[in-house]
Image (cartoon, rainbow, N blue to C red; front, side):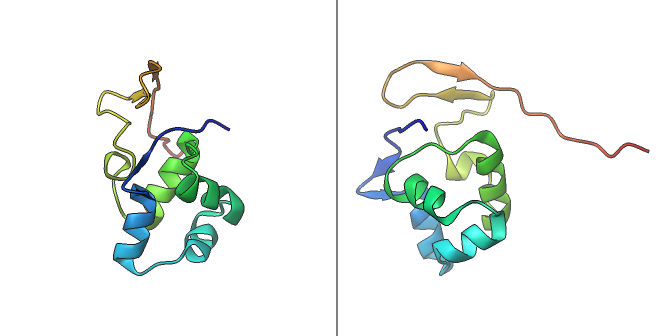
Amino acid sequence: MKKTANKKGGKSRLKRVLDEDGRKLKWLSESTGINYQRLQRITNQGYEPTLSEAVRLAQALRRSLQDLFPSLDLAGTLIDPSGGGSHRVSVTRATKRP
Protein backbone atom coordinates (compact mmCIF):
# COMPACT_ATOMS: atom_id res chain seq x y z
CA MET A 1 0.00 0.00 0.00
CA LYS A 2 1.31 3.39 -0.92
CA LYS A 3 1.11 6.14 1.65
CA THR A 4 0.86 9.75 0.50
CA ALA A 5 0.59 13.14 2.10
CA ASN A 6 -3.09 13.69 1.29
CA LYS A 7 -4.05 15.40 4.53
CA LYS A 8 -4.45 19.11 5.12
CA GLY A 9 -5.01 20.41 8.62
CA GLY A 10 -5.03 16.87 10.04
CA LYS A 11 -8.15 15.72 8.17
CA SER A 12 -8.25 14.03 4.78
CA ARG A 13 -10.56 15.39 2.08
CA LEU A 14 -12.52 12.14 2.21
CA LYS A 15 -13.07 12.50 5.96
CA ARG A 16 -14.20 16.12 5.54
CA VAL A 17 -16.74 15.05 2.89
CA LEU A 18 -18.08 12.31 5.17
CA ASP A 19 -18.45 14.84 7.99
CA GLU A 20 -20.17 17.38 5.69
CA ASP A 21 -22.65 14.73 4.55
CA GLY A 22 -23.25 13.39 8.07
CA ARG A 23 -22.04 9.94 6.99
CA LYS A 24 -19.94 7.42 8.86
CA LEU A 25 -17.09 5.25 7.65
CA LYS A 26 -19.22 2.15 8.29
CA TRP A 27 -21.84 3.45 5.83
CA LEU A 28 -19.14 4.13 3.25
CA SER A 29 -17.72 0.64 3.70
CA GLU A 30 -21.15 -0.94 3.22
CA SER A 31 -21.95 1.31 0.24
CA THR A 32 -18.69 0.66 -1.61
CA GLY A 33 -17.78 -2.86 -0.57
CA ILE A 34 -14.38 -1.56 0.57
CA ASN A 35 -13.13 -3.12 3.80
CA TYR A 36 -13.66 -0.87 6.84
CA GLN A 37 -10.02 -1.14 7.94
CA ARG A 38 -8.84 -0.23 4.45
CA LEU A 39 -11.05 2.88 4.54
CA GLN A 40 -9.59 3.80 7.94
CA ARG A 41 -6.12 3.68 6.41
CA ILE A 42 -7.22 5.86 3.49
CA THR A 43 -9.04 8.45 5.60
CA ASN A 44 -6.92 8.55 8.75
CA GLN A 45 -3.43 7.40 7.78
CA GLY A 46 -3.04 8.95 4.35
CA TYR A 47 -3.00 5.74 2.30
CA GLU A 48 -3.77 6.15 -1.39
CA PRO A 49 -6.85 4.33 -2.75
CA THR A 50 -6.58 2.24 -5.88
CA LEU A 51 -8.27 3.67 -8.96
CA SER A 52 -11.12 1.19 -8.52
CA GLU A 53 -11.56 2.23 -4.88
CA ALA A 54 -11.42 5.93 -5.79
CA VAL A 55 -14.18 5.47 -8.39
CA ARG A 56 -16.41 3.57 -5.93
CA LEU A 57 -15.85 6.21 -3.25
CA ALA A 58 -16.71 9.04 -5.65
CA GLN A 59 -19.88 7.25 -6.78
CA ALA A 60 -21.07 6.51 -3.23
CA LEU A 61 -20.43 10.09 -2.10
CA ARG A 62 -21.77 11.61 -5.34
CA ARG A 63 -18.60 13.61 -5.84
CA SER A 64 -16.17 13.81 -8.72
CA LEU A 65 -12.83 12.03 -8.55
CA GLN A 66 -11.21 15.45 -8.86
CA ASP A 67 -13.17 16.74 -5.86
CA LEU A 68 -12.24 13.83 -3.60
CA PHE A 69 -8.72 13.32 -4.86
CA PRO A 70 -7.25 16.62 -6.06
CA SER A 71 -3.91 14.94 -6.81
CA LEU A 72 -5.61 13.32 -9.82
CA ASP A 73 -5.33 15.94 -12.54
CA LEU A 74 -7.87 16.28 -15.35
CA ALA A 75 -5.51 14.77 -17.93
CA GLY A 76 -5.49 11.50 -16.03
CA THR A 77 -2.02 11.77 -14.54
CA LEU A 78 -1.69 10.94 -10.87
CA ILE A 79 0.60 13.55 -9.33
CA ASP A 80 2.62 12.58 -6.28
CA PRO A 81 2.13 15.53 -3.88
CA SER A 82 5.40 14.74 -2.12
CA GLY A 83 7.31 15.55 -5.31
CA GLY A 84 8.07 11.95 -6.21
CA GLY A 85 6.90 12.29 -9.81
CA SER A 86 3.74 11.29 -11.58
CA HIS A 87 2.15 8.19 -13.02
CA ARG A 88 0.03 8.13 -16.18
CA VAL A 89 -3.34 6.43 -15.86
CA SER A 90 -5.98 5.79 -18.46
CA VAL A 91 -9.63 5.71 -17.51
CA THR A 92 -12.22 4.45 -19.97
CA ARG A 93 -15.93 3.91 -19.65
CA ALA A 94 -17.15 0.35 -19.81
CA THR A 95 -20.00 -0.35 -22.19
CA LYS A 96 -22.50 -3.18 -22.19
CA ARG A 97 -22.02 -5.82 -24.79
CA PRO A 98 -25.05 -7.03 -26.73
